[in-house]
Amino acid sequence: MMSDLQTPIRRLTDNLPYLLDPKTGIITGVSEHPMEIDSPRFFRFNGRAANTEAFGDYRNFAIGGGASTSRELALAKTIGECVERYCAALYDKHSFPLSTYNKASFPCVHPDQFALYAKIQYENPEFDFDEFTVNSPVRWMPAQNLTSLNTEYVPASMVYVPYFFYKNGEETPIVQPISSGLSCHCSYEEAVVGGISEVIERDNFMITWQAKLSRKRIRLNSLSKRNIDLINRFLEVGYEIHLMDISNESTIPGIMAVATGKNTDFLPLVVSASVALSPEEAVQKALEELAHTERYAYQIKNELPRLSVHKEFDNVLGQVHHVNFWVNPDVQKHAAFLYASDSWIDFEELPDHSKTTPTDEMNHLVGVLRQTGYEVLITDITTSDVQSLGMKVIRAIIPGYHPLFMGYHKRPLGGNRLWEIPQKLGFDGIQKETGDYAFPHPFP
Image 1 (cartoon, rainbow, N blue to C red):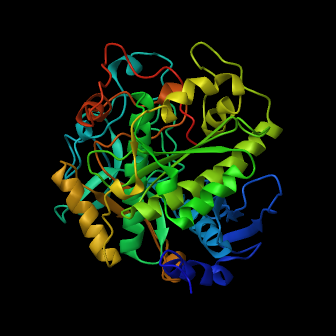
Image 2 (cartoon, rainbow, N blue to C red):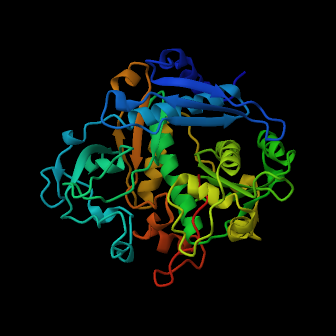
Image 3 (tube, rainbow, N blue to C red):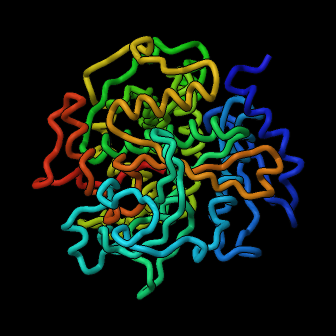
């Protein structure tokens, strides 16, 4: 019998024959990694989506992947990522109205609601982005506010990826386009739950890192047998595993998993995170993502030279650089605070927000966020071919939530959450005058 987690996933894998074709498929290739004897025992797949530049304006980020102890679930994750990347690159920028907030003839989310960058960053002449103000011309697209059920417009650059700002162009470069909040599933409600959860996950991790918070550790022996089995798959090849509760004020379960390689020749540090309404699922997904990231980091370690440690980290420019920086054992100590807390909890202390149906879970997530002062906006970016297979791809946006960015100098220092949420969680927090933690994050 399949688990509750696997049952809906079956609908994704059943679509693979209709998605996969090396010449004309939405997915052009899927490959399974060999289960190497010296790596944690997880099934892993990589997939490649069709090159959208062949029939659109932009080449998409085509590679997707997934890991699990279930071959079917690992494959389903890979399918979902590939389809997300396909849909997120198909758009006509000029179909979106270009306007400033002040002159828009449609309701827009106010620029001040987004957590972006600080004044000191904008003052740097080499900084890539300009301040997002009520007078900044941007292209807007409609989104549904799940709190009010009204239509509100959001910047298209916060929905689609890749998204390019052209030098001396008509549109203000306001943000680094990134995939946070993209979600693919076999129903709108399931996709929305996945997208919201990812936005919360990134907020959890980035605040934990930038504010240098040592979060409560979870006793591994308090986990379910199923998740202890996942832990053991890392232990048997020489990794130590640390699990931390990184939930924010919403109390939706957020888990950070850290693998340290003190007894292995592989990697000194690997980090992953997950958010789910069920704490059991949050732990499982964090550990499966850790397995996926471990192989990605191992590949980088073997194929690329180590990054030198620059005083200002000018060479940490993108995702690969962030991971490559932390495969150097000499810098591992600078991330040790992540798993250094002397505060422990049992798994049973994590709140369970899970509900019976995807609709109930979606409405519950929206309600919890509303109670903490935030609204959820959703854009449905499902293309017609993907729609015909009964699949949905959405982008979730929570204005004000602290975002993940790649590139040390592109880290977000604006907004309020970085400077206020640590104190609400019982930490001393950080102040704008002294700044955030002075190391690039290790998130993949």
